[in-house]
Image (cartoon, rainbow over all chains, first blue to last red):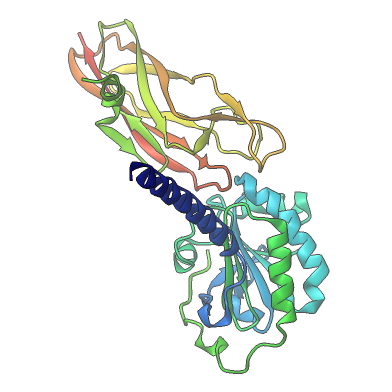
Length: 196
Length: 150
């Protein structure tokens, strides 16, 4: 009897451990694309780029967008930025765009030299607290959203992610084809988040 | 009282800002003209690190204690502990960081004409924290140092 109880206890521990492993695996796969039905509209914003031009997310209607919240003082962000430059270079003619959202408090004074130094080939806008809040209270950097052609968030990566996850995610979204003509883009929240 | 409880004492009264906590600094006391040294306890949350006062890379934001008011005390030069060099996946070379619990030391001179009695110096500790995979916006924590002019 005692031996049976011991075996049961060991089995229970093993099951818990396996469950833990499975949970860990699930959390990794959670970084891949969400099924279409589970996607929510990416919040609209109005933020200025390095030339002072106001950029709206709606400007990217019909494109797959990689929206990257980052900062110059963020080491993990500096690892990912060259990946995003590659993605932009390879896919810009396929209906894809990277959009960087800088969260530097010091503004363009520190961001412009950084963009020049790295030769960043995609558009960057200056973020704001309200934008970060609208996207779920972005605090950890980098935080990157993959937005499908319908303007819906298909994946979120918090912290330094795997390069292949981005490449695969973008490829899948690009292959998904043209946006659904169901007025989803028009359903984007009409929240205008002030440009900084 | 256990050893753990004793270690936690400085942090029972603490100024916290996310990933870093400043504990209550013990009161410093000295006569006019004397040199006094304060020790300010600081604790970084488990699993996180903050850049040291001398980060390995120019773009990193250093830990920095700045006095905003020293009252009857003068000076306040800060001495930081020896940082540790840690390797993280997101950096090519080891980074100079602080982790866990440590003390910041500050040296003051009691003003020659300081009135006898208690007072408090105040300052701000700016830091920027990261964990293994992400970094968090720079934050500032208030620091209060009680003193007694004898």
